Length: 98
Image 1 (spheres, rainbow, N blue to C red):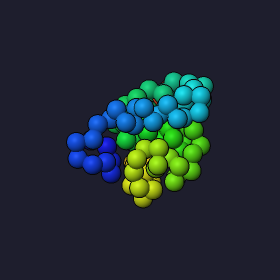
Image 2: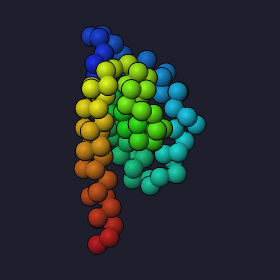
Image 3: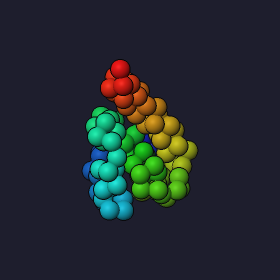
Image 4: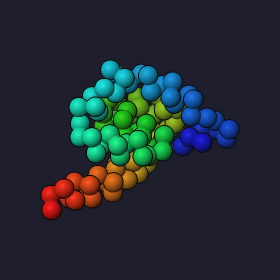
């Protein structure tokens, strides 16, 4: 179920709306492989929030509309997604430096 979506909603709508990301999100492929791997480990709502705002550069309001949720719910998901990404990526990076 999607954050802020009606009960019974599926991920199919978000998957279709992710096509609205400029260049299909290709910019993330130029980032570190650890980040891309970490993104795929997030659930769809959190991944959607991070990609729409941090990668594609949509405003909170635009990204929330694409994701089909309120701006407040979107911001909560963005914060959770960023925190989970830090929890995944930072240990991978620090493991390489030592």
